[in-house]
Length: 166
Image (cartoon, rainbow, N blue to C red):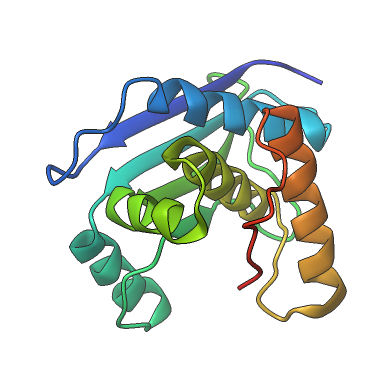
């Protein structure tokens, strides 16, 4: 297991000042997910912070859903095959797009901190980049939730009484 992980973070929204420590938290969440999943390669992940207008446009363009959402994942892995860069030896896992506006609202709605919400959204999206899917529900959704909670507990954000299944 390589612990070489590069997380590129781009704050593309101007509505909210992203709290200090958020970038470090996102990097920790990405690395903790890869470690939890025993991911064997050095990896690169791109994370963008956007506002609700931007994520709505992306959701409409890429998923034909005309609504804002909390997070979008754009995995680069196809059929469990990872492309390793000849130049760097890193696997480009994909892109994570987090709506800071949505994260703030959900943290308030669920009664936990902004940090826990961002950690959750990052871990959730990382699992999508690694091939997990909850859209069909059932066992896959349960497996993904178990993985999320395992990583969040390691990060110091165990499930609280306010946890809500969507």
